[in-house]
Length: 396
Image 1 (cartoon, rainbow, N blue to C red):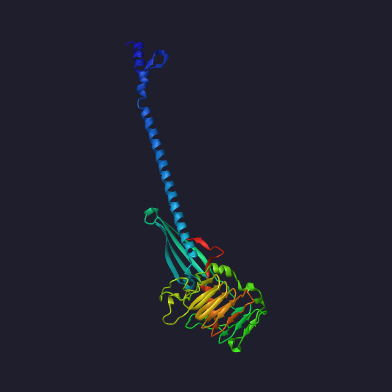
Image 2: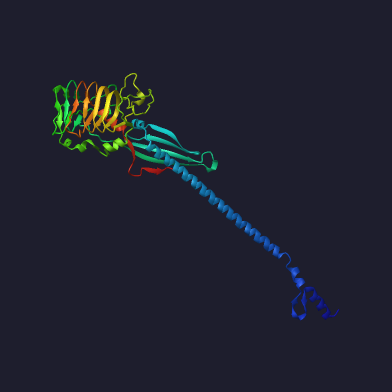
């Protein structure tokens, strides 16, 4: 075969047509067969990887957001438990000893609960810890947060400068007795910590010298206190006032004879239950640590019964029969009559806003100053307040 013929055959085989250098389309198609499919598969794989990454990222963000939401709900549950206990502070906690713990469960909603523990640190401080749990029983969705709060017990500061402190006219006659000698109530065993300092039988406004029929009716004498010429001394008690204490009253006095109700370990709280001052057999000892604030919005007449705490009378007070009271009595007007077997361990404040009338104590009424009764009454009526600096802290 000639050389030219061999070249034509070679050109035909390689797809080159003569000198023009044009490639045969059919030959070029055979050389690139499968390239589009490969590119398509690669693109699909890349899209699958990208979509999978986006899905995983979205799922991760969703789970993180969901977990964060449950954790915040657990924190809110814990805070609710703290605030609820401050709002519903039990008077029995004021009698807890240092180191004693009160623990209880607070139900919030289905699946959300808080466990609150109160530890008495000192006579004035409590540590309140709340553990909040959200989505209880939901496995990995369950969250738990703990918070702690330091609270201080705020006591009213009611002056007890005498067994009876009076602004207006006062008459003591009959067989009644008023003593400023510190007297421990019968069978009260925890009074030594309050001291034994005595005071006067009667402290009075120098403008109104009390009329005391017999010298032996006053033990430790009387004292003319110039400060008692200001009636505000009978309505302002440190950080508290007569009005603010009345707003915190546990009991609204209805004039009936009050008696404790309960058992040796329980106390039934009601307007007719003013606590249990007695420690003798048969006493309702479940109410011995209950020192309520008792408020009478107007004149109050009592005929017998017994109680303890702080009695606020926004009017006149009249007492007949064998009424016993251990603590503090504040009367805005005067005592119309205190006779019979009226027995007070503590202190009596008479503002006597109507100085044209006089307070009268007669019969065989007995008024004995008692630091222990006064202190327990003020402590029993105390309320919790948050400590001023760093009172709240999250634990985890």
